[in-house]
Length: 499
Image 1 (cartoon, rainbow, N blue to C red):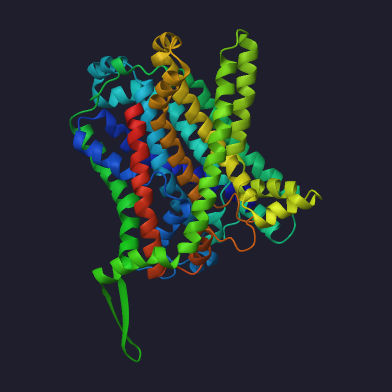
Image 2: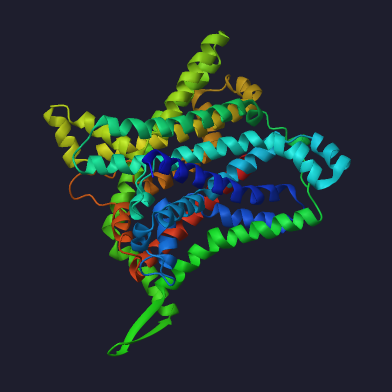
């Protein structure tokens, strides 16, 4: 099979599957099943910011080399179709929370009071076909393309299952010492195409997103048998995508195999073993966790500083009197940000390494003795998202408090700074936590440019996953899953409150 075709199958297949599986839980927000809507949202949001390698490890703990139902990476290498299916499945499971929130926001911002008329005319099915689906299609397309752009540039899962995609091929060429830019050009074009088209779709939806018509939005548009069916399927998605991988790690971390005599192994499960692995795993991987924390914190601080400047510049451009200049500059800036986010991880590594190949001694010293290279690599992923969140936050604040802020201009500087601090401290903390979690979970962007002796926990887990998940790794993954779930619920709660 051609590498480009394999990449398209993995990226579009994973994105399409994630969008389809997330669509029904998103539709649950329009039903009268308040309890199901709340707890389905909580369960899916808990996986919102989990790293891809944690999701891959959770599924490997159940079905990998040392899983309770072994369908190993070794078998995947022998059967390409199974290997591609495994990669598609893991990527889709990791992308479901992102797709869920994008589609849910799309429902809340694109549906108006006309949905009630469609409901009265023909019931739930006709209402969905005539009112909900046409308004939702752009969000479905945009979500699929953006997720496809993200997946096509990742090589962590494809490397585990030996599936050669364009990004994986670029990574292997750079790993073997062949940094040919021809190998990087094709994955760039594939990711950029999906990212730019998806970004264009969302750019067209931007006015609807800014002017949220909450007063005309229906709260319980779907009821009766349709509501019960959507709730049942949504819970099935939660069981498969959330509960099953979590149970895989719990079972693996507490699994005990004792050889009672030669050739006879007694297997059991113990709560004591589970809690022992859960509390000792962070100690065993403490150095790797320290490296990840230092790298993520530094990258977050740099991204917040640069993205806040870009966001203010973007808003200044939008206030220009010349509409042509405003549209042109905004379009160029959006294209640059989307292109940066869509760049495959190995290509980002190649760009940064080419900078440090300039024959200046101090550059080589920085590359070998500091974290500057991986920090620069992470900016390609963090700055676009941080800029978007900053723009939305500042724009929402200026819309709500424009008149009162004009009155505050008569106050002294310290009073105005206190007003701004009270208004923006919570969004800034939320953005910082969001960026830290994303930097902590990223790997493909800086995998080949880490200085000697630096081993973040993402790289250590990536190496260990090639040999299956043992009890120690399961305890560490369960520990990271718990922290990621708390962060994901916090960020999603802030998103829900802001919307």
